[in-house]
Amino acid sequence: MSGLALSGAENASQLDARDQLRHLRDEFHIPKPPSLQASEASERRSIYLCGNSLGLQPKGTRALLSEELDVWAEQGVYGHHLHPNSRPWIDIDQCVSEETAKIVGAKRPEVAVMGTLTSNLHFLMAAFYRPTELKYKIIIEDKAFPSDYYAIESQVSWHGLDPADAIISISPRQGEYTLDTDDIIKTIQENGESVAMILLPGVQYYTGQLFEMEKITKCAKGHDIIVGWDLAHAVGNVELSLHDWQVDFAVWCSYKYLNSGPGGIAGIFVHESRSKQARLTGWWGHDRASRFKMENNFIAIPGAAGFQHSNPSVMATVCLLGSLRVFAKTTMKALREKSICLTGYLEELLLADRETAKYYKIITPGNPSERGAQLSLLFEGGIMDAVFRKLEIAGIIADKREPDVIRVAPAPLYNSYEDVFMFSRKLQEAIAEVSSAVTVS
Image 1: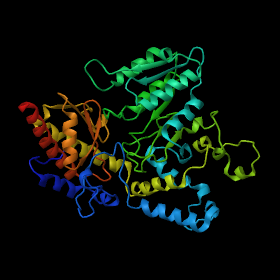
Image 2: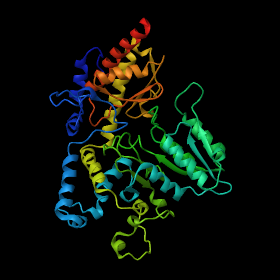
Image 3: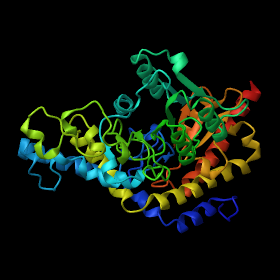
Image 4: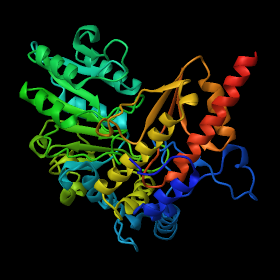
């Protein structure tokens, strides 16, 4: 991948010097290590590899929030229509929809920024999951994120169906950790007559597997199955072409790779061919020109915006805007190219250290086209927690999933090759210390 030997930090420096996106790192605040966060004197910054859980704060976000607080303080309710920065609150969601549409590969009217991920999933399932006597089942993955499973299970039960019968869960093959696309296709083909919907993640949160979304979507739609995707770990991470792939609907959050802040506003995609789908309605989905006539005669905004319910949080929306302004300085193609190199460099470093690597296995696919900006390390011998604590002490901020996985996510917007190199060395040191203590005891 790198074309350089992996023996020293100078190689990471050379890779960083060749990185055409390295300037974007300066757009973000890098937090201090947990052990130093109470100290104002220290300038030391952490190695932050946790963008798959919570993205970093763009430096421009604070100013955007301050501007909105000033408008609120100085203009009160008039901020809805008279805004000194051309962001009237009445249309605040429109200032983020165009860039969001580019990121997910959609036409602008196919995207709405609204709500939260699971609430949006419920709303779109209410619109798209219409079970019949013969076609009522939903295909999911066995290890779906719990919130997705809860939503699906409750929707099935809401329709008076038995989840044990209506939900088809696909599991990895014996001894494997990721799903084989052929197994997904086979499940669709064998159950197509009874399946109403398929809902899978674009990128699996635990393993980091990137699903073959185009291929799976095409197969499902060939069996008259509604196709939905949870893009929580895919949006802002990998290239997406939701419109061209003919996806029916998709949902996502924005606080991971989109860096909108904890609990940030989410988004939906509804393909233009499905824009007239019956749905649960709300005031904010009503035609903008006549919304304030209060006539109780719902006229949907064309496209995904017609699925909106309540006015979005201005503060949450401008937090997303702060990040999208950084995304607008590059392209998803360029970010994906760097991501493949950055994650590939991490993989090279980990595999080259054979002494350390015997304590864990990488359960993320080795093929770059089958993963995003994440490697999941499955530890042997119950040492994961101890290793994770050592990494924290060393200033590494990553993420763990019980009982034995550490997830490492080098985000191309703000992570460097030096970050990746230093992580590999700190991991080596942590494992050496932990394994030595285990051996001695």
